[in-house]
Amino acid sequence: LAGLEPGTLQILEPGEDVKFSQPADVGGSYAEFMRQQFRAVAAAMGVTYEQLTGDLTQVNYSSIRAGLLEFRRRCEAIQHGVIVHQLCRPVWRAWMAQAVLEGRLELPGFVRDAARRRAWLACKWIPQGWQWVDPQKEFNAMLTAIRAGLLSRSEAVSSFGYDAEDVDREIAADNARADALGLVFDSDPRHDRNPPAAASDPAPPQDRKAP
Image 1: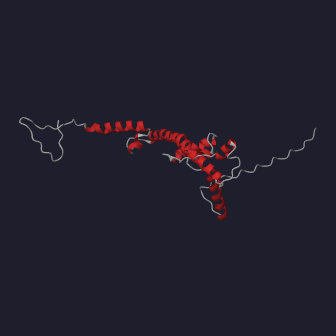
Image 2: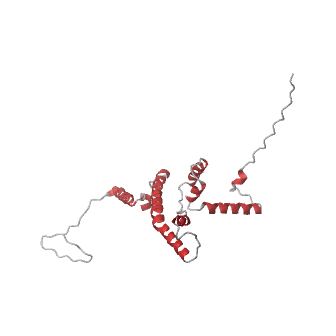
Image 3: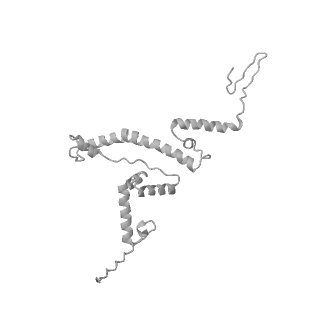
């Protein structure tokens, strides 16, 4: 065996010959072979094949939704178990302690009282929200869960990466501005409610005389 570099002039001895390797042609199975290799790589990385390669030729709504749900569970575990607990919370504690020591914040009991310090450090971490494959179906399912008492509005808003208190303030400000300007929008559900029908007063009982 000998290597041939570009521009090599090989001098052969009498009776020697040069033969190049001729591997068998994989034909039409090469694409499937590479697809299986990429699937193995994606499984090892904890992502879907479609996210690794960008190939969406063999997916439908159900399959890609199932793959995305599993991927999002993995991302949420990393967000809360790694990013929040190992990065955000230590930075938040260090920032608060530095602000108190420099007198930027006046937090009674922060330095000496551990219980009050935990109360001052308590906060809610809201990660980035997710976009759904079919928003209409997901919103209908979310509305059903809220009406059934299985999900709160705050949790539903947080799943999109927003703070429920900020959203409520924005809704109240938009409604007040629309009312002040006399504007009526189809997106305002207040105008979809029909006023309850006034209950008719029952007829007064008639006096009956005993026979």
